[in-house]
Image (cartoon, rainbow, N blue to C red; front, side, top):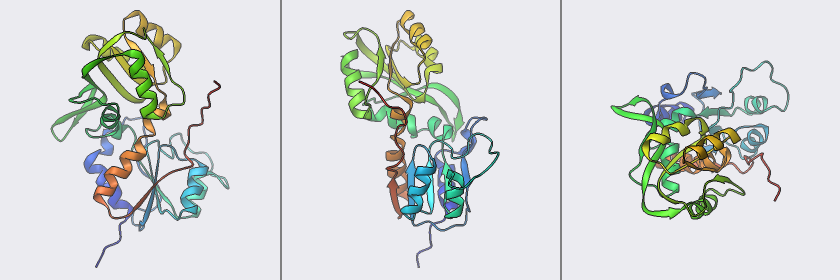
Length: 263
């Protein structure tokens, strides 16, 4: 007799591979809406949860949404009709978020980003703690098998991440031997690159002043975008959850980048 998968089974699995205790104090992760004992036959995975994604989950009869960015991040003062939270509650849809705990976990989002960009034998850029006897942390860096020009890496990065447009800083012909990556908004961690002889840092959400500082200190930068470096989490969720659970997992089609580019 098959035992129905429950929301708490998903939460427990995340506790094993990217414990919620690893998340930052300001973060909000785990089961944020719903019933841990609710049955699950279909899961919608996404980067962000808004009213469009919530309605998509309802239309596709998903009992659970698994997201990277928390569905509830700032304190809620009210829940109105047709809001994301109201749609989820009305349709009995639970929501689980794995955010900074997934960023720092070994085998988590930063490792997956590094893998997507062809980095091997990576090391942690900024240590953030320990789990299961091993260091965890933000970002990954590695030496390339074969040095490449900055412009060639930028083009490849845009193609792999599906970036409609990206910003970069540095001499197009600069030969890069060592790369660091960090999913999401990693501009604040650029300092960690300077004492590791890293030639290029790939992340998102760089301010002009961040770029200027890196330029003056000899570090090339590719700002591939917050969304672009993290929407691959849908692939990660599908890959990891499919190996563990025999249930249908759907990547959201309504969770798209809200930023538009004028060419």
